[in-house]
Image (cartoon, rainbow, N blue to C red; front, side):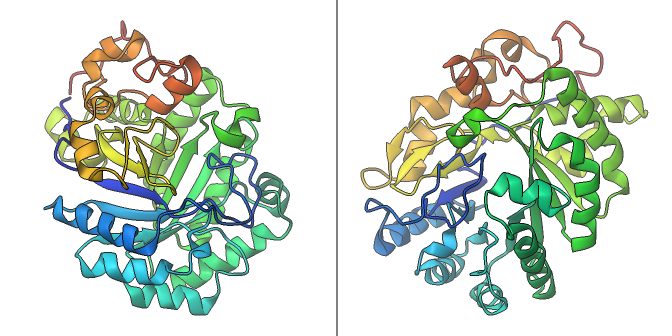
Length: 359
């Protein structure tokens, strides 16, 4: 199945406004700290970057302010309003702390946020707080989720998928449904930052989990997506073909809109100090917004151009018939092998098994 190459501009810009955060998550890729760093972008610099992103459209990228905890930036509301005023879609991914009050949620709504996301790494305090490193975080997360939904803001729940969390995924999905979330995004572990000490799923368990997601997703009242597991798209195609869906039906399905999107192809990350990378899990800077237009980095940097060319990927990812729609996790390939164009070791698929590949 063919997939788009997003050459002109990213669809999504994940922007780490700060690394400051009051949590101590075991899997934090940012290795967040209690206080803001001295080299963070100033408000005026952020506004200049937002203007650049807005000028890249149409369609303009969707901006997701993240961290750390973006609530630690006193100018967060002003930046949301500024971006929305430029015509950008702006979402916010805060940490669930007592600082995420009802009043602040309503202020974000008034500023124009298009969505908010919260992390939930288990169905109870024992699992979630153990992963987040702060007692009480589970309760804060549930309260924050209720406030977001009550304010009429679409809620995404993010869940880490690793050996420690996989046994609880079904129970976690039940909590996600009760919270009224519109989207459940499963982040498959990449061993970067603090997460270097955690154990990922093996390939067999990953494949089983992806197939479980594909088969269960139709009965859940929310959309299911994966982060750093693009081979979920291959699983979806295989499941749809096994169910008798035609190539045209697969192309027209809602899930096909995400085909091809991955680090550097539709996705760009801006670090708190202005470094531009293909994703937050792939710490290779191709430029800095203090020195160069971030859209120019995305369009022209050799790193980004290579990531948009799956035929140059090494190993199974380079020869796989699904590489246009999937391409493997470039972040995991780099973390595992040191080669950003290398093979994603979490995928169980053999390119020699071509059944269902050409949709």
